[in-house]
Image (cartoon, rainbow, N blue to C red):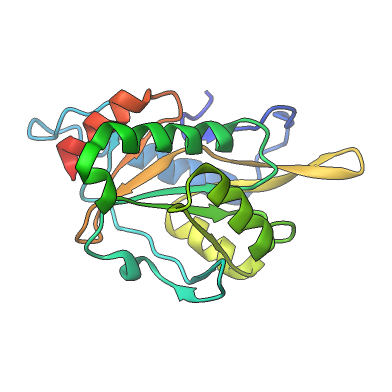
Length: 207
């Protein structure tokens, strides 16, 4: 059964044999899908992750400053993992984030939108800055070493891997946007298929 947490970018292969790391991750994601099903859970279009451990990261912004999730305490956060050469998933998610900000009105100024690259090999600070600011000057691009990237992804139960494409490669990666409240607590995950209005409704409900 295809996991709703995973989405391969256009052209990515789907016939890779699952390795133990991916099987373990899928088991963890199955547990996530059961979260928030109690009678008191808020009604969301996305997945309620209240009660799940909040992930963290130790990365650099595009100016080279070290960043952790705690640096954005006091602001609701939308957190997305992707890469600048992503053909469709990432541009769609970031364009939707612009629409969400428009729907939030005055509350949009409180929101912080973080984009963590899973392809630091190609996404230099300059490329990442140009990419995120092309969508919105307020969007924050974050990157790290291969080890830091892996640790951040594992912390949020995010899957990613290189997929060869002739002489180059693309990246297969989780297509969820995580919602973290102003206290730094993980609250929900927005599905890629959700509309901007549905996402804005979830933000108002939770944050």
